[in-house]
Amino acid sequence: MHSDLSKISDYRAAVICVGGAGCKVASKLVTRLCSADVVAINSDSKSLADVEADYKFVLSDGIVSSESEIRAFIRNYDFVYIVAGMGGRTGTGIAPEIAALCAVEKIECNALAIMPFGFEGRQLVALEGFRDLHSKCSSTNKFKLDCMLERSDINFNDVMEIADDLVCDSVEETINELPVVSRRVPPTDTEALVGVSCRRATS
Image (cartoon, rainbow, N blue to C red; front, top):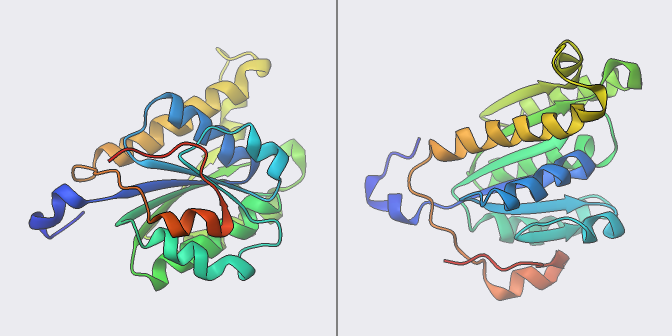
């Protein structure tokens, strides 16, 4: 995935988790000690306060007003993996914009889109969001929550917990295929621009 072998030891990766569904995954990835930096982005600061992540950003008015700051942040990485739920406002709207910024900065970007249950009535919006995200990434996969309902071994009350674990498995599978990941703390002036760093990554 990274052709310049002389730079492998400096290869840096971030998992950017967007919206409510994405932020749940962020907390689990931190618990699992994910080797990449875990970034949580949401429009709800109160919800974000309960999320575990290396870096947190509140984008209450979308990405437009914070575009330069987000670009400065992602420049610290060689690879970005976006995780976002489709069908809602934040994940559907912001995830493709982050992917677009990665493209501008020539940062390889993959994504995993969590598709809503059919009974939620958000499939059309979710599909449009997925197409938008897919058009801006090197690779985009779907995780269909409806598939969880087809499993007879899972109680419905446990569906979301198991789904989050499976999403984390998929993310880690991708991260583990990357060159050696060197975690790097972005310059201190970037962390104060659009969000609050809740747990500093270690080099």
